[in-house]
Image (cartoon, rainbow over all chains, first blue to last red; front, side, top):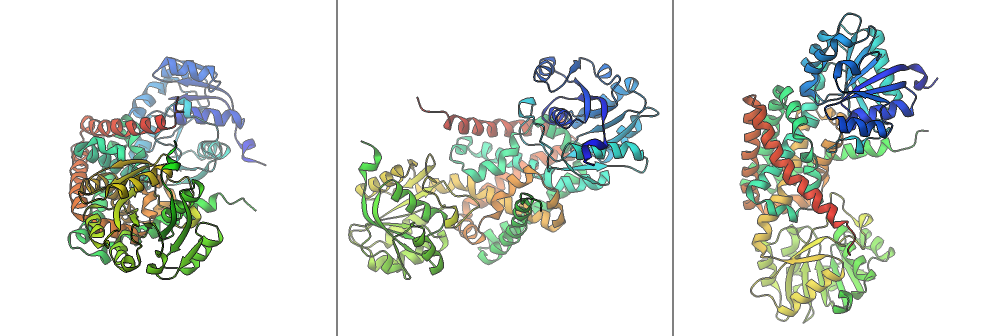
Length: 299
Length: 299
C-alpha cells in the first residue's frame, strides 16, 4: 500500500499562497491527498492568479472564513505572523481539523500555536526543508518536497492520530519525514540555515560598504555564497528574531573559527591555515557525497 | 575579422594541467589559437591522461624542457609555486616567447614574475574568472572562458605587443578581457572572491566544531553558501597568504557588518535587522539582474 492511500483530506486550506504554500497545494493535487483546496493571503491579485493556474480551487479574503470546513489547514506565511493568524482563524476551525505550519522556526512557536487551538483541533508543527532564495507561486511546483527532508515536531501534548496524519501527508507529498523536538530543531537550524543566511547578508553588506561596483567582478564563488542574501528580508528578519538565542550562540562559534583563520593570516602561518581549510573541506565534501548518493537509483 | 585570426601561436606550453590549464588547452585547440601544446605537471599519470584525451600533444617531466620552443607559456599551477616555477623554466624560455599565468592573486607576484623573465621574453599577468570548487582535467572544457571575465594586469614595463597577444589569446578563447592594475586587482578580489572563500571555510568549521552530524539537515542554503569550502586547501592557502594584507582588511569590514546584525539580534531590534537585510538583498539582486541580462540574446 503506497503512502498516497494512507491519508486523504476532503478540504484543505492554505494560509499564505507563496512558494511553499502553492507547492504544497500542487503536491496535494497531483498525489490525490485532498479533494479541494481553499487559499488565503494578503494580496487578492496573487490568490486570483493561484486560482487561475489551478493551484487552489477558491479563495477568501479573510483568514477565518478560508478555514471553514477544512479538515487540514497549512499555515505557510512568514513565521512572524503565525501567532496572529492562528488567533484569527481559531473561531472558524472545524472540530477534528488538523493544523500544521511550514515555518523555519519551531521551539516556542510550536507551543504557542498548540496552545491556541480550540478543543478538538490539533496543531502539529512541520518544517519542510525545501525553500530557496526564490519566492512566489511562479516558482511553485508539485515535486518541491520530493526527496526533501521534512521535520515534524510533536510535543508531549500532541494528538497521536493528528501527528500520523501530518506525517502521512508530507510522506505522500514525497518528503522524508523525521520527528524531532522543536527546541532541538531550532538549535540545528540556527547552525545549518539561519547562520548561513545572516552571514551571506553580512558578506554582501561588506562589499556594499567597501565598493558596491566590485560585485561586477564576482564569479561563481561569490554568487553561490551570497545567493541566499537575495531571500526575503521580511521572512528572514522574523526567523532570525524568533531564533535569536541560538543564532547569537552559533555566530559566536563562527567568529571563533574565523579568528583561527585570521590568526594564521596575521602570523603568516601557512601550515596552520591549511589545517583549517582542510578541516572544512573534509566536512564539506562529505555533503557532496551524501548528495551524490541520494541520486543513486534505488535497487 | 574575428578575434581568432588576430593571434596564433605555433607551440604553447601549459604548466599545470588542471581545470584551468586543460580548459585553456582545449579552448586553444577548438579555436585554432595554436598548432601544438606541450604540458608539464607534478603527476605523470595526469599528463598521460591529458595526452590520451587530446588535451595536450606531448608532455615533459621537467618544467624547463616543457617550455623549449614554446612561443606561449601559460603558468596554471597554484599561485604559491609560480615564483619557483618561473625560475626553473627561465633558462629554457625561447627568445620572443610570451609568458602568462592564470593566478587569482596578482600584485607583487606580477612584478616578481616580470622581473624573472630573461632578455626578450615578456610576462603579462592574467586572471580568468572561471574557476569553481571543482578541479582536475575531468572538469575541463573548451568553453570554460566563454563569456567569462578575464583580468589582464599590464605594468609600466609591459611590452605592448606581448600584452596585445595575451589579450587577443583570451578574447579568442571567448573571454571578456579587462586590463587593470595588479594591486587594484588584489583589492577587488579580496572582497569578491578571497573573503567569501575564507568565510565559507570558517562557516563549515563552525558546524564541525558544534556538531558535524548537523550537516545532514542542511538544505540548499547551506550547500550554496559553503560550496567553495570544498575547494583545494593548498590552492586557497596560497591565495589567502599572498593577499593577506587585503584579506585581513576586508574580513575586518565583514566583521563590522556582521556586528551590526548581531547588535539588532541582541537588542531585539527587528526594524534595524530588516534594514540590514534589505541593504544586502538590494545589491545581491542587482547581480541576478546582471546575470540574467548576460543570457539575453544579442540583437
